[in-house]
Image: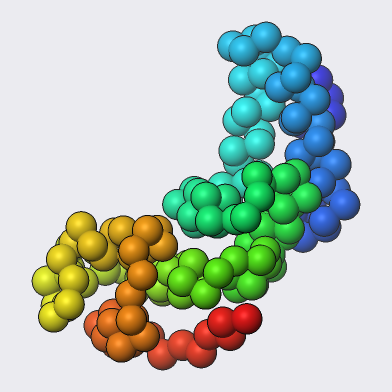
Length: 159
């Protein structure tokens, strides 16, 4: 399919949304494992995950109050391509926003969860991973400690 191979400007919401709808159509009309299905999957993954890290995409999708839509995904891709704060793109609870900001900052710092947990007074690696996925709530002081460990100062608008 030529429309699958079309170059898309990842900063243009209408182009991204149109391409995601093409992928969705291919998924609905092509047999799983067919050449078109595989090509659409590869192109979809490239468009999405080259702009929104896979772990952050899952974190956001899992913590929405609705099933993620094509429009939601397009907004995330565009924000990622523009290097915008992904925690502000879709309506998320404050815990998820902080978890996103921490996960992004941790990855940029080059530190692993294990390395941070070793320096933390409050958390072991298992709890830190759960906190990064907004599966357990942390106090503001614990988040502050974690951001200090990775050497990042942040300001977060919770609402």
